[in-house]
Amino acid sequence: MSVVLGYDESPGAERALSVALEVATAFGEPLVLVYGAAAPGSTGEEYRAHREAVRQAGRSALAHAVEEADAAGVPSTVEVVDERPAQALLDAAERHGARVIIVGSWGDSPMRGALLGSTPHKLLHLSPVPVLCVPTESPPPR
Image 1: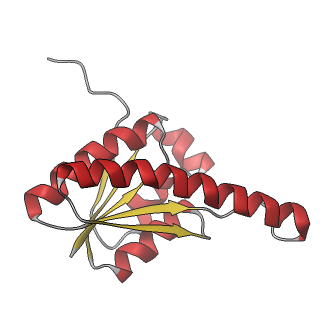
Image 2: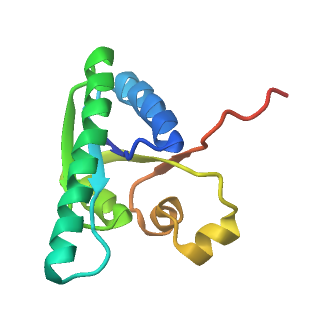
């Protein structure tokens, strides 16, 4: 089994990384770091250049997450996939026998996520494994 994390260096992804490391440590599972790098459009030289730029951004973002995982003593695997983020995470979860998929959120309203198709919203509806959606900020103390 494994813990699959969608990671892109956004504030939500940073918090999700922290939570994913806690979960992976608690269950003694490896961490699979996934970056969905599907570039918009599908043809021409501009597409190829954009695709490579997106893939390079993903590799750079995931390098930071690997450093964090190494520091926490959590074994990790990196996948930069030419798919949209939700599908990249679903496929990685299947390949790696994921216990859970973890993603950060931007704090969008549920309606906005439904209309715009946010990655967490898609995962919550399509994933056969549990999805842990980590908010960008900690809730205020009660």
